[in-house]
Image (cartoon, rainbow, N blue to C red; front, side):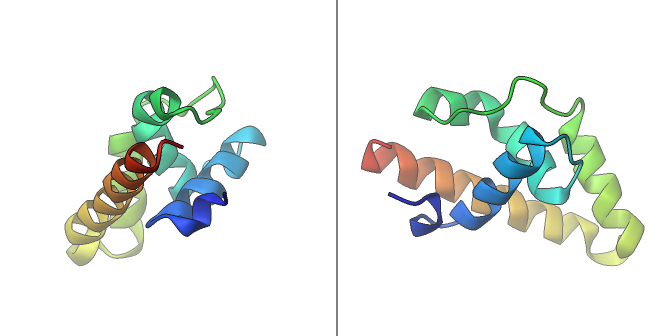
Length: 92
């Protein structure tokens, strides 16, 4: 089953691909935030996750639009948690 079938799965797929090639992107930062839980679900998250991903994600969002950084950060984290919950329920 494709990860994209789950809510937020598109971000997780992109983040996993970016991490595997060392790309520091918003999806890679999000996957780094969720790495422990994603691994417990059974996903192969690369070992070299990005340090301080929460701060780096917020800073990246604030750099492009400081006024909406907080709400965009929270929306991305909610998508990650939705993916994690759905993947756990499906027994991924």
